[in-house]
Length: 289
Image (cartoon, rainbow, N blue to C red; front, side, top):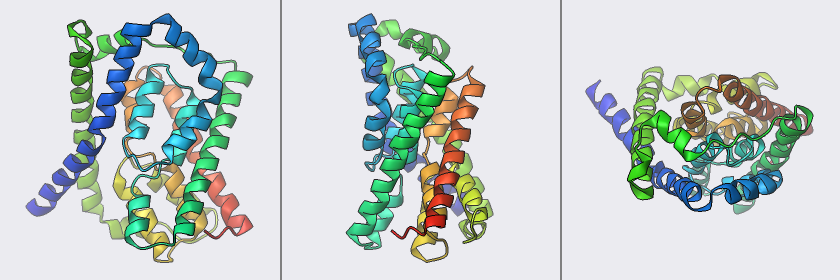
């Protein structure tokens, strides 16, 4: 029992340390933008926002576990659109790529999976932005870094670097606590039982795989990837689980975009629904990666 607890805490610490540089860099950039560029940056971001999903989908596909967390922070600050955030969430690969490489998966298969995730992220991101900003006519509400600082009590007046460090440490502690709790829960349930929930059944497989993918922990992408490599699930459930798996990005979205529960729920619901629908489509047309 003690060994499992220590293993869970160790894994949580390692997972948290992986994203720490990305969090710090994100807060440092946000502080710099707020202090040095002001309203001009806000205007430029608003003008460039329409192409955000394209860049989000491309950048998200790189194996950087902290990028979804960085995107969640940027969205909470009003610096990117909901579509851009979703594009990053859908395209990010988390633990999939390292496992594919370690299992000597053919390069062509890896490239096709990554390309599919990127394309799905970009298309879905543009769809969400169209629905949210064009049809519903919702504006991007820029929330300057000082507003975020007041809620986090980080004393920004002490300087850009100091403020970025405080933001990073506060959020890092939050992520560690939640990740440790999830690790302990998953250890208690057992990855074997968790993986057994996913059946290679049309529609049902995608629905369950999407729920597992939403778990803000690397274990979800590990389970989904291993099940696919072992031939237990097909391309549809695999893609659904990996599309929904945004790592700690969803966790950070709820933490930093507080006060906007409906907005957060809407984004997560879109992420899940989109992942399931794409997985079902892949199953239906018989895509083989």
